[in-house]
Amino acid sequence: TLEFARLKMEIYQRVLTVIFSSLRGRSWHGEPIRCPDGRDRMFHPGIFIDSLDGKEAAYFNACRAALANHPCPKCLVFKTDLHKITGDF
Image (cartoon, rainbow, N blue to C red; front, side, top):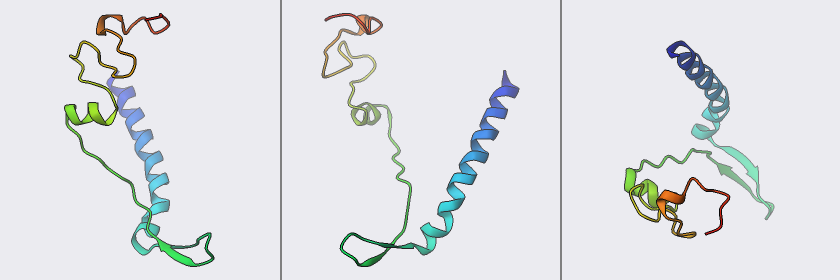
């Protein structure tokens, strides 16, 4: 239902707020960390965001487009047989 979807979204947003709030100050001001070579270095944590369109997302996930006859480049299973995940091909 719509109410449950909104509740779930609100819970996720509050959890992410708690998680990311611990990174806010460190991302702006950095955090000194002792490296294995014995030197202290200032690190600024960040979150990598990659915006992809459909074709780029397929390459990023190492699969072919959804309309390809063989979507997986490794196993080469035909698209009509993808639902048979336990079969031998």
